[in-house]
Image (cartoon, rainbow, N blue to C red):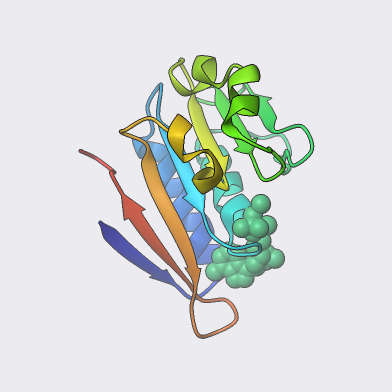
Length: 142
Ligand SMILES: Nc1ncnc2c1ncn2[C@@H]1O[C@H](COP(=O)(O)OP(=O)(O)O)[C@@H](O)[C@H]1O
Ligand SMILES: [Mg+2]
């Protein structure tokens, strides 16, 4: 597991851009962390790093947003409003997770049972300062 400490939003954005470089078809990035931790901020930076130029907004009500213009298809999940994993099945999540694109899942701990074993897991914690965050990253590059 690696830990990354950041002091600013810009550093989080740089981390997201860097992460984007190692993502491959079928990569799933599972994001956990409290509201305001920076899941969407990181996701937007990953999208930017993949070459997505359109506005990436949180799919809170629609669960999934798809973007096709980047280096790889990009699927942004926000499962905050799902009642259970069964609903994710109904959305056909396997087509996304095991397909040709990259999936990023906000609130991934709510759908733990659906996550592939090799998902890149990122937990975001608040640090002491207002803009400080600590990223715990597991399962990257192995
Ligand atoms: N180091 C940082 N990384 C990410 N976001 C930060 C950081 N410092 C402050 N912020 C602020 O925290 C908020 C993060 O919101 P967001 O990314 O939507 O979180 P989440 O999706 O986890 O609820 C934003 O308002 C952002 O400006
Ligand atoms: Mg969010």
